[in-house]
Image 1 (cartoon, one colour):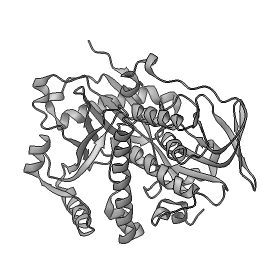
Image 2 (cartoon, rainbow, N blue to C red):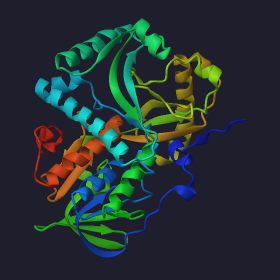
Image 3 (cartoon, rainbow, N blue to C red):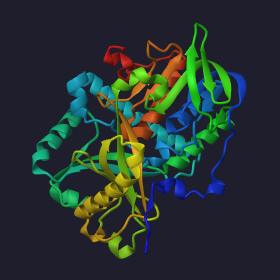
Image 4 (cartoon, helix red, strand yellow):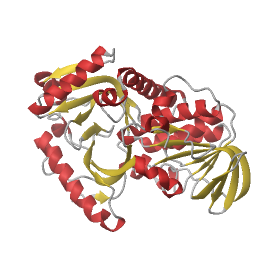
Length: 411
């Protein structure tokens, strides 16, 4: 009988330990141009972007490279930020909303091109994404979202209930389709970017937690567990501010989503599940996300809640895994009775307005931040690498300020 592997990410489990690259601990004193705190997807993308421009880079990861939030994500490359267009327009105006969606789409497409150019073997597959509703009460809101996107010149297609069923074998009321999204193995994608950065001269360290940063007029001193690094700039790509930058935490909401991965499904079961050419999201609160892997597994994410205490995480994970499999069976009854092979929690960090914070903060000279990616973590992490590179080179582009802290008044 299949035993569920609780607390183990499918992405880490599928890469044998002997094939996982290892990097040394940081020791002693050193100088560099940029020190990057955080060895997840955003940190490795930043290291690569800077190294390509011949910037001397030191990357510091507290644990094992890519094995925290990156390897715990479902691995979706989404064109949309982690918030509806209509919400952004209501908060920031039509022009800003249009720009944010354009920049996010371009960032996702550039990420896919970069993965292909670097020949990173991470199961990159281009797919549509479909946001659908099973509630008649939500159809009006989804239709409004569609109308606003079309009016702004953004790509979107409306799915009737009949077309939604043809596309997905789901019984729903309507859907909104976006072309040319993608999904990957996020762990291998992260390792690929780290290897590319190292090839360009970046120094990469694991198991090297940063204890504090201190700045003066000339730069920043980064104190690690076993050494000190002097840098002209520090990039903080940790997703959440952590204890290093506690005053910033009030701008973020720390939550958890849960992910289950089924066993590889046999052909008779797959035949009843419709096409597999789309990433699916429903309009429930919280949302569910569904995608397929190349070895015929369903990855299903949802059951979000606020960050839990360490002592209760194992018990809650078991509960949430059972809940997700039940909710998946509501979408696809043929799944009933199948146990997940993997179940794990994924930390999700969101800002108060749903957009990431990418850029400097006036209270932290010589620091650049990439925080609060939401469920669009891979896209936003890569987008952060482009924006922060422009900040470092002092070549900001129009619209970069929309992701900065000044939209909160700079506090």
